[in-house]
Amino acid sequence: MQTTEVDITDLSHDGRGVARIDGKTVFVAGALTGERVRIKLVKRSRSFDEAKVEELLTRSPSRVEPRCIHFGTCSGCSLQHLAPAEQIAAKQRVLAENFERIGKVSPARWFDPLTDEPWGYRRKGRLSVKWVAKKDKALVGFREDNPRFVADLSVCHTLLPQVGERLAALGELVGSLEAKAQIAQIEIAAGDDTVALTFRNLQPLSEHDRSALTAFGQAHSIAILLQPGGPDSVTPLWPDTVPLSFRIPEFDVDIVFRPLDFIQVNAGMNRRMISRAIDLLDPQPEDTILDLFCGLGNFTLPIARRAGAVVGVEGEAALVARSRENAARNGIANAEFFSADLLADHRTAPWATRSYGKLLLDPPRSGAAAVLDYLPRKDTHRIVYVSCHPGSLARDAGMLVERHGFRLEAAGVMDMFPHTAHVESIALFER
Image (cartoon, rainbow, N blue to C red; front, side, top):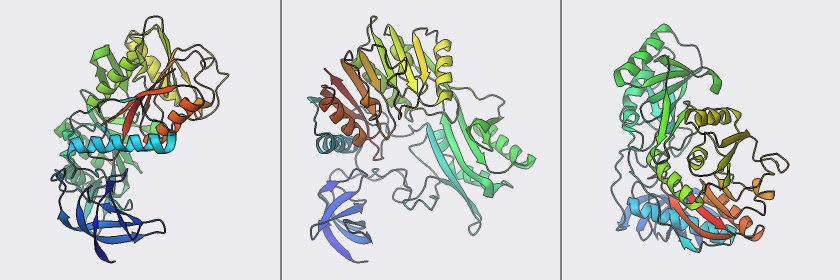
């Protein structure tokens, strides 16, 4: 397709440069705001075109050399060529634009962005695996920009080094197995003291393969588990038990989890996020607080250390059971947990009809719109909303302001996923 020169005027929400040709928007992978580039169009559509950089003509002062040799091929990161401080500033602009465009609101003030160590932070993830007979090689990594293909990775600098520096070794391990074509993925999960890899095996493994996986785990001090079926089929291969947990020292909480459970990817940012959320909630001994989409109790249990009582509600029953176990393990008696699909209407549920002065929301990407049809009630005066998608946060912010009479007092972003376009946000609402 044709090449042409363009000026990059903005950065899109997914980290691509934005240009215009004859009034039509062009998204340019690998380009930054303020640069002039020669591009090659790779895809046309009615409303916009897509392109890649052929030649960098004018360089942005914010451009840095990507640390990873696989940048541009692997889809795991899209912003390694942008200085970290500029990455988080761009994410804050995305949040501001979403508030204005979708929610028709803006915060009275902005928080300083929360940041932490930008490398080696990722303690949870899923690696794709593919045996390529023509190459006589097993590929282990994230997907390429074209999701049909697995990127051929030798290293990943955003993963914990115990795993990120061993991707080539993992590929060699899978390639040595008799069931090499039947390993679909590898799930990464790390606690404070243990790193675990769960191999999704589509057929039972031979003794040869079990021995090879065990030897790898022993050599690298990595726990190995197998998943022959659904989530409940996960069983340890080596060692016999795999204790996974992480501490939240500020609140003297230790949370035990299982390899496939959802936990926040970035341990350092998780601690900072919890601290900020609880500072904003300002729990008092007389408060009863509602924590919706509570998961394992990541916020609920720290809140319980400060509040009179806290109620956590989560859709996945297994996580609710583990939340209760974690509360008991930490000697927390003022936290209750309920299982409920929060995308459905629960306005008559006993937990929903109680009085809560403060509310914490931490929904999935789809947001909390269903809950906001019947909550918060009139006695709720403060809401802290933690979001993994700026669009749904902006929509829900509009609902809280227009329907429920709240003010958007403050908001800001948290760099849970450095070098990616993923935006984690936090907002404070009061009335």
